[in-house]
Image 1 (cartoon, one colour):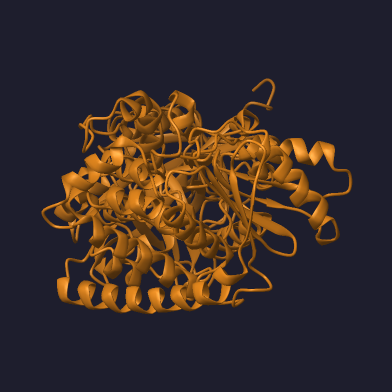
Image 2: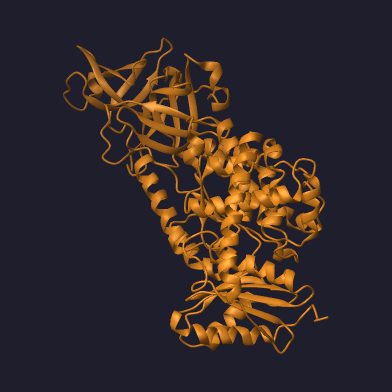
Length: 616
């Protein structure tokens, strides 16, 4: 038979008939019976042949496995076989040549035996059967294979394999499921054929609908191509049953951006089938305390993802960063994700560092098209969510307005989004929702508060619950803000810098309540707002100082906080300086022992900044 290195031995799946048998090929078989003239063997339960005694290579007992070469197929269906003993070969499964059924059509075949072809997206071992989650492009479904209680069936099958399944369509716990009678990993031409068909379907289904934005915005139109790219990558992850982790800054803007995507993704997952609770373990939304992706965040995400991969056979996730992810502070975490080849997307409006893009599949940021932080992440996230799933438009169309007032946007898009929803939500309503989100997220800490947040945002349209909850949270938040301001405002120090800037300094560690709402960042913002009201028309910079950090807010001063932080890092040796944020709103970190030196260096740079406003 020549060199045996490339020999293929074929294994007939249970549903195969004589039509799948070809002359000259080698098949697996087992001994079924004996006669004077030879041995009868079964290639499967449906196909039987004869090894003439002259073509036997050894003595056999009933049920012995043998390898046989097909010498000929007679007109009456009899198969003449020869026993062969190749020392090196590999096995390929032959499946019955019939049209496979798509998961999207499975409900029409309940109680019938079907063939399914697709990609293995998850392998979960239960106390009973092994559950294979399979994606075929049209949808996602489960196939249950039972070998022995709690024992892995078909252990050769791995995530990402192209497989073919034959089994009966059944209903289990109100969900469609295929009870496997045979399952095989496809290789060679068959694998390529199925993978190509899958890719074609996925590529087509993942393409977002071309819909207009909720408002007319030149900046958004410039961002449309990359926003569509993000929407397509997210849709593709859904259809391939890849988990999605949505990380967002823990404020109203970040929450609005992330919840919009979460709602769009969850709705598509429900439409695609699979487990009834798939939306809860296939999409996870997690708040980040800082406006960047911290090592703590990626460590938590990787820990959960690797455990889910090991315990439940899930793929590693797609990570979507919202209202964070654009600066060098994010780089360590992104490099961590890169080790595991986890794809990362960013939708953000912080001033970006171009070095970050090497770690990303796509990066939506208004600064890339000449815009600025006034185009909020909530605006971007809502419009991308509509591209992902236009059906959820009515649930999220007020999110951009809430994010705009919550993040103090001064872009023209703010008033356009407010006008869009003005009949249902006034500007004060949006401000109250934003404050309620900030307040509740503070107490939620690292939890997403999925259902509570839906009520605050009025996603569920339970108006009475929404109104009562928002009113209560705003009342409590304002009471705590007033208490904080009463304690802190008498301790604000002021000076006028050489460029005419009115600088205000206050210690949020010594003169503010700690470990309660509002936290230092929001406390600094509240103080700044009050100082702006008192000092109308004057250029103002407010600095809330902690033991090893400072929070900056400004009005009428053309600062570039990320650049200032980088310069101070290089200029002050031993300062341990890092930070960033928006151009005129941000924060800086340092080592506690260098606090005075860093603050004075920061003030010097503020005194060199151009000023838009002049003292009247």
